[in-house]
Image (cartoon, rainbow, N blue to C red):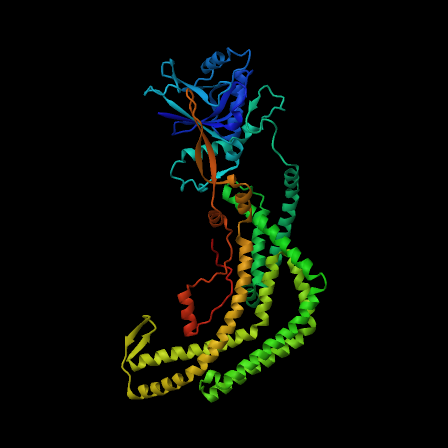
Length: 585
């Protein structure tokens, strides 16, 4: 039988006294949390332990005694041994350390039902009936701040399995923080040794931020309430405005940040670890987003970059229009030596050329206001880089609206012919599509129906190459625009969802996110117990991203690549819009 004692490294050279800790339920192990120094009054020790137990919720007890003999304290061990009658326990640990040796000697005093005591020395390894002792040394501060994964769910119904021994050790140390507030500067009757016994660890900046966070949260809550009231005005609930707000990336980002601000300004403290990490990730992500946006805004308004961009926009629009006109002229001829249907080719080409002329006229009409639009649009960067990228995505969508119209016209015409050909092909085979049963059934047709179907099939088949060529060209142009918008959406999604706070903890304080522990032999001297050093294994970076990635309105395609290719082949429209109701983890 092996008894494991988790012993803090900060207590290795503590003065003689009592070991305060907890016995792990269901396991043959104990966790030492602190050493109360001699001299002390047993009644005050009992009262102090009861107070700490009420504050922390941990079943604290006196595990035994700790002896580090000094000159003039030869009788200290016998005195500490006699304290087992004052602090009655089923087991009393008599731990001592000799000067000049690293190992500890542990005697376990067991008390039977009649109150009689029997001693078992852990150093007698040849006795098969003895109780062997293993000391597991741990760094108390790291274990207290660490979170062992996987974390438990907040729903007690889902936590059916009892926690493991290691998780109970981590939870005991983490919940025993009130025990670590007693340092050497306190004027109380008791003195103890733990990781904070030389003085409490604190930061003036953190305390000032805590004091300033209360009025700041009240101000943010008031602003959010005002914003919610403005958004609830009846005019904003009309269909056109509601439809546009659900399709524009800027409106989606505003609603997303509003939800974040509600989470940060909530008066309820983060009790669970996941809630704390979620708030930390949102806060760091917001600060980084605003910082990058301020840098972008400072670059835009320095050296008159906005005027430069406005002057570049009109020549770029004219160049794109010229290239589109040349492309349409090429399609209206004999593209790549292909023989198109002359009449349909001319109709489609002139139709699209007319749209290009309309669009160029619109751009030239808006040219005096472009610099002002860019100047006021650049101010959105003060809200964050994600707002600027979302606004840029919407501006690209508006500036390339004519390409989107060309794609829709070509796709609808191509889809009409594809479905028409497929329906007429079923007519030749004596089949038809049953709308009610959603299947293909047999059907008999007369000669007139077959004759008309043959004529229509021939017409659609010979017109298909011309329509397919226009559809192919404008689909490629549309995919270029969608690819650019997709890069912008992915950038916004990355800033919103990437767990910067968790990743910072993983890089700079890896012990905060623990995946497990590893042990190495610290000391194995003859005549002493085995000593192991417990070190924390941090989580992998990929696991941190997977666990703590913030929920976002994803812009990733919901269809597989096969479904996407099928839609392109049959002419179904592909929308790159981000749906507000869709959330992914």
